[in-house]
Length: 230
Length: 230
Image 1 (cartoon, each protein chain N blue to C red):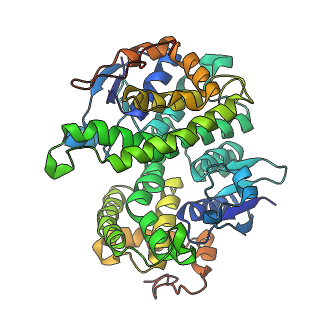
Image 2 (cartoon, rainbow over the protein chains, first blue to last red):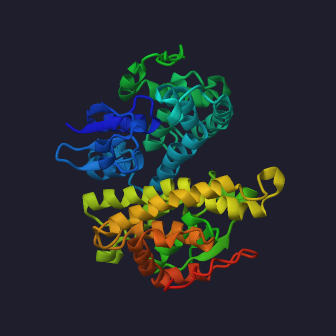
Image 3 (tube, chains in turn red, brown):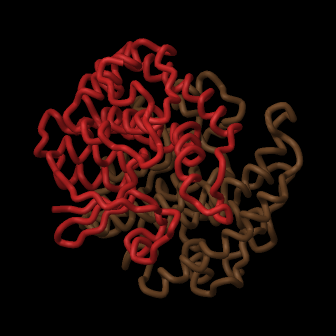
């Protein structure tokens, strides 16, 4: 059984958990607090970030993007037409473009601020940046998320799923990041009906269930968080 | 002939220029000032970032990471044992890990601050963030780069090139980012001898010459910038 070093509210870890579920791979989960910078963890990934996947035979695969490519190359063909990174050239470009959009741009403009300010800073000592959330950053995230929701709505208005007619890594990444912000009650679902309906579809996938059951000690999720019909 | 939308001192654009040279592909270069947010450019890449590669038949490939994967899939096999993303499983993981390291981590901790503060802010109006460089950020970049140089030296002490026995995307990305900071005179080459020697090797590659000839109006490069024996 592979190991996945993750954090329950790290959006990149959640993306990989959703992907593994689609591949039918059930990893053992190891919760890693990256801010503690454990030496053993840094030898797995010198960049010190979750997620890191460790195969039973010892292969170490660090980082959400690297894991996505690795899984496609080692397990993608078995999914046939449900492949999360489709084989056609322009489809691959579009999926990877949107994967970067959510794992990098949405993260930088929304989910990193939400999660760092409202979650990670609770568990950090003051001399390492811990403390009360910087509400300036939380508000910036709340403002930025509106345009991302409209972008999701725009794409879904033209396609069945974010990158085309099939569900792909793009949908999993978008849903993973949104789910973290949603846990904190900061997704304004009334901003875009199409985006909301797409997220309802994502939420009802079997692979989503473990994420909806995640609970962080001392941080109660928003009322609609686990509700499939929010 | 493909088009490459780029900026001369954008490290991600430079990475792709180096890669294209290794593939023997000579693109027409179109200088894009992403801060102007031209509508035509945003239709190519809604994220509004350089580089964007546009093939002669119309295929649009946006973003350094997406372009790297695209080039490997469409032109990689022809490079045979000089392939920039080697075919063996763990080698691919290592190259992609280091590609993320330089294109994301080094960028966030060093080259983004250097280039944004010292270059982009010159060309921006004050109401869009233009003005004098924030020397706090420039100093942070100058401090962070030391540990990255030592990391390069550490890797080169164990291997011929950054990701293994052959030159790969990892070397091109690292050299691309360093070259931007070097233009600005902010690489402390005395920090690590092994890193310096590796960069000398990179600098002497034919694909590097056009980068060393780049001149930005009003911004003279550092004395050692184009010097192969610095």
